[in-house]
Length: 68
Image (cartoon, rainbow, N blue to C red; front, top):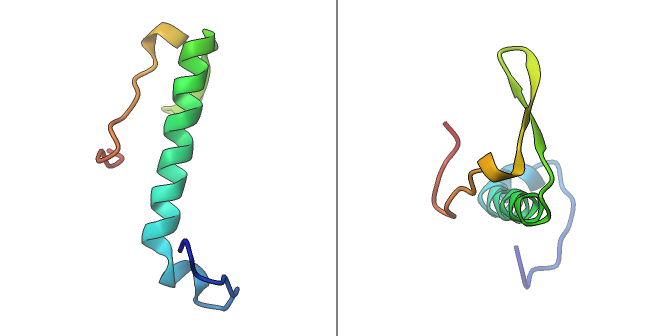
C-alpha cells in the first residue's frame, strides 16, 4: 500500500487485505507495548464478559503471530 496513490474502490479492502491486516497488527502491538510500559491494564472480551488484564500480565505478540 505504501507508495501507491490510494483510490477507494468497491474492492479496496479485498485488494489490500494483507497490507491492512499488517498495519492493524502493528498498531495493536504498539498499543499493547504502550499500555504495558505505562502500567495501564487492557480490557478484553472473554466468554461474553469484559475482563481486565493487568499491565504486568499483558503478552506482546510477535510480529509473525496470528490470532488464535
